[in-house]
Image (cartoon, rainbow, N blue to C red):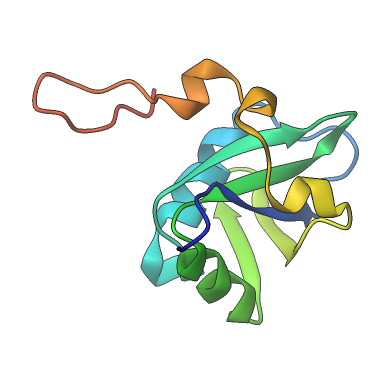
Length: 121
């Protein structure tokens, strides 16, 4: 039986220790774009205890693998510049299969519009 998600990746970027406001939204759009990142369905949450690093929670696992296989990740943000990013599996094996308790309810169950499409904002 296949493992159930989410399947996290740790993301660090050139934004420094104090990330720009709304960075989570930009990361979400970037990692959901198959064209830009190789990604797909995912949620982005700050890494607990480190506001400059983020966990991107993918489902299914092969989407995470596609992102890992892409060599260069850059987030182009008009007015703020281009941020180079590194993606890797979390060092803590416990984070590699994040428990649902660690993920806020609003992330586990994203808001949907009347047609069932996910609402990002």
